[in-house]
Image 1 (cartoon, helix red, strand yellow):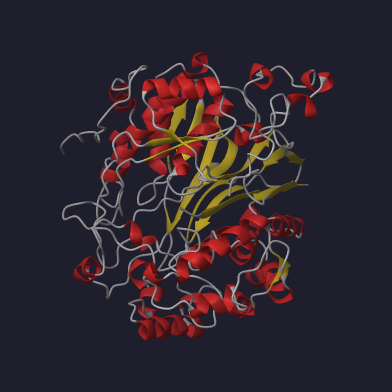
Image 2 (cartoon, one colour):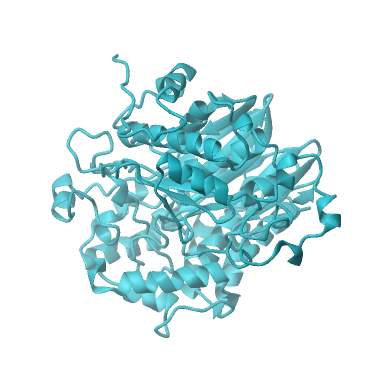
Length: 587
């Protein structure tokens, strides 16, 4: 959805006045008449709202009920991990167009006891009984289909929750599911964003060319009357409530064993799929120490492959070699250099990122400052680099992001997804959730690090973000949405570090999104690609970028979804995304 255009044509005097101009503080970027946060009129307050402040805890999610559940858990004495699990369970019900227990989960968190950033890889593997030959036979033009059983990998979310809770949980596991179960049984009013994308999913999944083995379970759960719920309509999911009750009572085994696992295996056998109880039972999340780079005094953290977390770090490393602040906020020069840095980082992403059990990426080299300077020398201020190649290693869609923080100083940055909106289009009999289609992101080219193999983790787009200052937690944040995630994360960091924007302003600032780079699936780069500029980017900037040679185009909503919590001495600030249905709360 595009949320940022509804006021674009109104005159500035409609909302701005002398008192507003005097309240903008010391940051000169807030006084720019040609730049505004989102598609509000020139001169409006730079942020869509103020940050939420609290002393004891905070939560920022893409759905009000999830944020409320997190705060309730925190107030009951739960940890930030407890709050995150409760929020995620609610999001799986209330925001099924982005996440659910049929998908994967990645986490970074600040552990106040060890005073370290910890990472967790909660992504699942391909079915052991699905061969490369079968995948190739079911694929077209060298790419795995977006929908259907061929694209389904083992869901990792529930085991990630369990693994987190075993180490950091304070409340009883069963209590964390009470808010989601209540909303599933009683019903909740559907939000605008969810209503929009449920309708699009119905159209996508039921078209003849979808390739989905069966769609009746999707319709039974989300369109029982033949249409999906509209904004404000009541929606119940008793099947998911029963599944959650089993997980609450049985722990991890309530999903990866017992009745749920048997139902999943029987479902795939019925439709001609490959996932088995053995595949589910074998899955376990992995603690994964994150990597960091320093960007102008701020340590920014990212997870290893098979995630794309290194792309954010590579992009920022390259960008740091330029005086971005001097180029100017929302200037053509600052955007041009950032996009070129993205293109260079993404060629390495396509070439080197894969399941580390099958391919060891040269992480130290990819994140080195020397390599960043080498790549930065390729960027010209007045021309576009074409074509872009990955570096030469020395020898030897959709997603939900959310964050929580507690009174003890723990901050949890967590992202969870089904990929491509609702995922594969397949919902198991009577369980109330959709399976992810992450297997689509494997390559099929011989010799590629990310080539499909049984029991292998596919390349993953979902990445949480985290930043520290002087060895202390500063920012738990993320920008959801496929390949937008590293691009969006880098823009948030640059907005705050280079241009001094506040937490909410950094997210509301107009964004850019570049598409057309080489993909980890083996899909080739599309020339110099397309640069999407969100409305709110100054007209002069657009014109200057076009003169350099960028192909500019609008985007219906591919600019991500931002949530963040910032740590201040003795307090938290929480911000959320104007582009989604979310709420930030603190107490």
